[in-house]
Image (cartoon, rainbow, N blue to C red):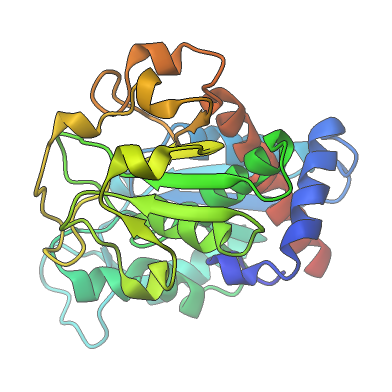
Length: 311
C-alpha cells in the first residue's frame, strides 16, 4: 500500500480484515517493523478516538510518533500563485516537503467547510499534502471520507456477524449541528465491497451523493428499513444537495430499542444520548460502539503495517 487516503487503496479487503483481526490477537507481533520509523500526525481539527487509536497503532508497530495541531503552528496557504500578504504565513508546498523530512508516514485529519461544496470535494488539504509530500499519506478523516473508521466498521461487522449475508442499515439520525457526510460516505463505500445486504434510510432531502450511493436502496421510512436488520449503523449528516444545511431535527428519527429489534447498534462516536439514540440502546448488550472504537486501533495498525512493508 502506497497511501491510504481512500478505500480503493485497499488491494484485498477480505485479506486486510482478516489480518487486522489477527493483529488484534497479537498486536506486538510486528513491533520491529516500524523501528526507527516516525509517524507525524497533523490535526487541522480536534480528535479523540482517531488520535489515540492511530498513535497506539503506530507504537504497537514500534514507530515513533509526533503530533502537531496545525492551529498551534502557522496558518497554511493552499492556493497556487497567491500573494501571501494576509494571514497565511507558510505555503503547503514548503510545509509538506519539510514535514516529509521528519516523517516516514504523514497522517492528516481535516474537516470540510460545509459551505463550499466544490472546494470540499476537491479535498484541497488532503490532496495538496499528497501532492507535495515525499512520504505516504494516511487519511484520518477528510472533507468527504473517513476510511479508517470504515475499515474499523468492516472489521466489527466481520467479527460479529452470524450470517453469511447480514442485513446492514445505515440510518440518519437528528443532531443539533450540521455534520459532514464523510463517515456515511466511507461506510457506504466500504460495505458495498462486502457481502452484505445494505439499505440506507433518511428523511427526504438528506440524499447523499449519487456517486457514493450508486444502486444502494434508499428507504425514507426508517421503521420499515430497520425491520429484520442485523446491524444498524446510525449517523447524522447535513444535506448534500442543499449543502451543509440542517433541514430537519425530527426527533422521531432517534434510534430506540423498539425500532432496533434484535439488531446490533453501531455508531462511530461521539454520540449524543437521547438525541441520536436513546440510553436503553447504548447501555444494552446490543450496542457494539465500544468494540467499534477498539477496532480503530487495528484498522490503523493494519494500514500502517501495509504501508511500512512497501517503504
